[in-house]
Length: 188
Image 1 (cartoon, helix red, strand yellow):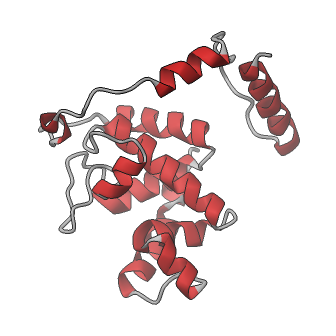
Image 2 (cartoon, rainbow, N blue to C red):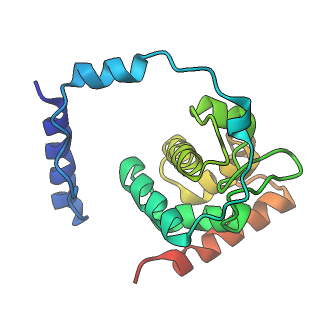
């Protein structure tokens, strides 16, 4: 059984049905058990120095590539990802909020850790973790982008408590800003 071939076939069929672009690259010819074993290998403890911000700027093309890659992996609109990044950090990989959120997508340390992000200032880890988190929120709120964006800002518990965007001024403004800037990041 080649699980990657099955996944590729499913993705291709979904693309045919929805009119979306089919997966660009064929699935890797690696047995599933090998991939699973690699994923379950114990990791080295994180190096505290590796979680610090660096002064090196990240070219916009690199951020765009990370967004496109993760958008495809997690099936999240790349314009939504870029809009979240723009509103969270203004594309500053070294951004740290007053409450401790870090990196491009402003992941809180607990959220980053739960997503396997060891260095939230590493653009690749941050965008992968933030996009994965967005995917989980979209799934949790049945694809409702407005509620997923509200949960990204205020937490899913607040959205569930109110059954809608929470009545917090910051969150309402955030949702309006993110949704209002998505068109700016849509590919022509």
